[in-house]
Image 1 (cartoon, helix red, strand yellow):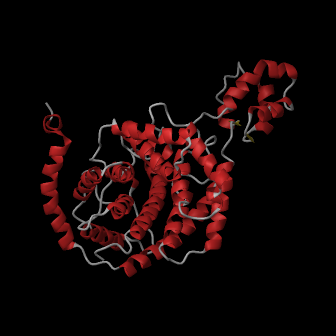
Image 2: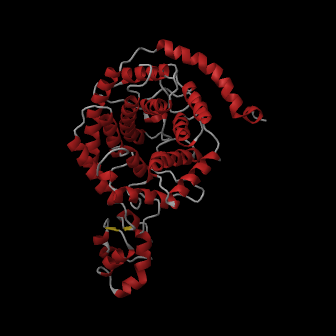
Image 3: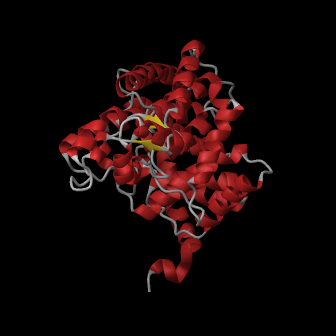
Length: 413
């Protein structure tokens, strides 16, 4: 019988707590005092990098994506909330760009060239393929609009023979980025980044549209299917990705909960789903997310339990690695102190100080923070790792800035 089966998670927590207390002392003794002024300076320098790279992503890639534009907005909104100098005109422009991009990805049909190429030639003649070229990449929000455009390109006989094939190929799946306003990750992060602000992203019609899309794609068991951020950019097993996705989606929806039955039911189903899932405490991102989840939906005892586990999972340099046995990185450390600062007890600040020291020492000359993707992603392909390093560079910088900002003005400093 496994140890966990014999003594249970709570008993293990007691064992880990004893060892964790000694580790925490070592961390606290080694940490250098980091002032709020130093944190503000570090974040201010990071905003320059986040703006430069975030705007370049918007210009060159033309999509919000789950790892750039939402975090551009979130980091700058957090900086604004903590009194840092933020160009509000630029921020409003980014909000408007993001709103338009999300609205452009609420399509029921969009025929893509590579998908058309997958259709067997015996099912779709070359003459019909040629006629369909003007249709490629055009977005359609309704079936009626799509079929009306198709009628201008094909003869009546061609429509009778091939309309169903073309429509099936062009229809976006319920969970696709092109149908869900940029994808679940984007929707949730936009709700996070715009909380407590006034912008086009918080206008009732747009916000309610995002919430409705999230409700529509929730599964019957209460979970949400992971998007690219959690499904392909991490090396964790799919059940853990499902949990992380569901916890973040639920946390994003919670501040906007109303008496409207469907929304409340969605949140209740998600909580019930999470309560039935096994823990994965060796994954520090999951652990931090679970603590934030319990802060919103759990008891005081639940929060204390998961906070203690997160504190004890630190590395000796004061930071957190993405999973057990992995070197500390800026993304996980930023997330961890963001969550700890929101849930901290009176004696937690030494751990936050140690993490602030780790981040300030590891900040790059351009104001950014590096996060090696090889420590997190499951890919081993050098070219793919190069691309993902760029993404994690941005993610790590954004989470470091957001996490550091959350620690400002906390007791003990």
